[in-house]
Length: 451
Image (cartoon, rainbow, N blue to C red):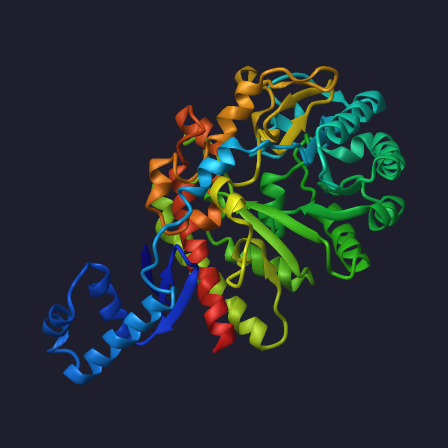
């Protein structure tokens, strides 16, 4: 499979199955398109003879054939057979999302967790439940040594003592079981203080700091319950925290909505505030919500991604670059083939745990009875859900099978698919459009910086 596109003055040819990227001139770009249609050398010459000299066309055809023989152009898909092995293999649990607090001190308008309630009741996880969750993870991790635990909410800092106690317990257990815990935390920053920062810098491998960008954007979507904005409170803390971590092992993570389709300005605002690790994600919401992204928003959003990519190239060359999560792409290797085919591991390798110990495929499925998998006392009592997720991949989804971005998004988010289509075997269409554009921009950035 070949994908060709033009972006910021570059003619780019992506050989999907090998992952090879070729930055080419107009002649080769046109030749590749015709060869990809199955045209012969004579047919290529006939089609392009009024635009280019014949000798140049023949040379371009010869170069393309050399690339094909080298296995970097027009390559065959060898991965569909590999998915059979993936379905059959025994999976282990390697990561948990601990819902340490089903409560929050903000009232973010787009919150899928309903300000922490998750279709249920407000609650804080007890140390005993959290302890059982870590025991479950150890017991179900097989030979895997490195394990991940994310403290999530709601707002985890509303249950800070239990977070600290569970980290201490995890450190004790990793010595006894030859495991290594990688703890992470997501916070809105309201309760952040120097003691918490110091603890996180010692114990947390990564911290996600929730901020949407410009003050007016952030305050509109992330207010306190009585309506006041939270930007002025959290931004100085986040700056201090990011600097205390040497601008590494954290993300400022925002969400853009229908109300700020010029979200590149929010990304650049965060960069101008000194943050070097930035993620600003598109909101995912039913079309009935006034802030939801709509089909008619797509042209503006796609143009905004192009604008951001061009500015990032400019800033990088000026020595003031920053990382944008959705433009991080590894063209030299990337994740293993199984990860490319099946995604994040939700429902198989990655599970979410509620404050009372129920297990779900991920945080976005919490509260959906159909996907209640078990609990920390009994373990996974509905293995058919594991099998359902294990069989969900880019070859079982018709929308993914012929998509050039399938090995970069790995089929997209199962929860988004379920929420929009009632099945995890589909894909969220607006999300797919945005993902394809982000892949194109990420590759263009690589090309521009290698120029």
